[in-house]
Length: 238
Image (cartoon, rainbow, N blue to C red; front, side, top):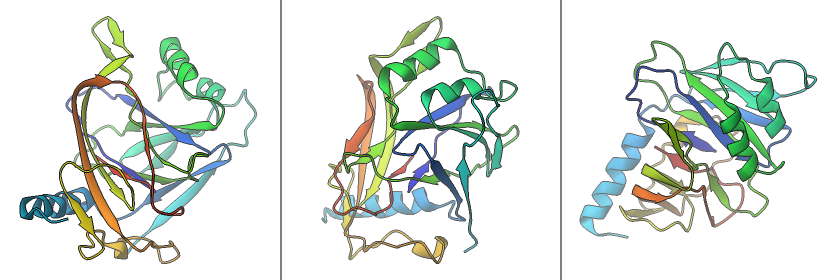
């Protein structure tokens, strides 16, 4: 399960496209009333670092069963309008009154992702303030690793930089082996409040919560790292 949140500092409605592995058939969106999740994680990891120590719920499965010539459905989900493209070519079926896809962006995804990937296309609703994180789940990548979509595509003036990017990311992960540069918590410090999750959700035994900060001008790439066991939630990303 992946939680995604970002800071918006422009009045423009920017589209966000998140590649999702191993999800040709469906992606499940979740609305979980836990708006302070990142704040809770940040406080806990910060306090651990300083000490130098180691339900209402709604979900909807979206299936793309339409013919290729049909426009993809636009779903109102929390603070976002969302469409799901099961494969790369389905990005051409986006509703152009909501999403603006340039040929350059389409080719960018084609150069980086194979047919194993689907694409979660999101845009903030107009007037959204204090918006909630986007939450979705899907099967693990075929490698068995935790996939975090961090590949950037940003236009700076008339130039598009694709080899390197300016990073400003804080990534929290549960039960992973990711290196943590801001703190680490064991199961003794269980910072995740699972009461916000649905009753039928398989809660894992939390063995670790880690935080990694990535900032500055660095290689433009996605991140994948090893988790302790399969069937654990995907990372939480801010």
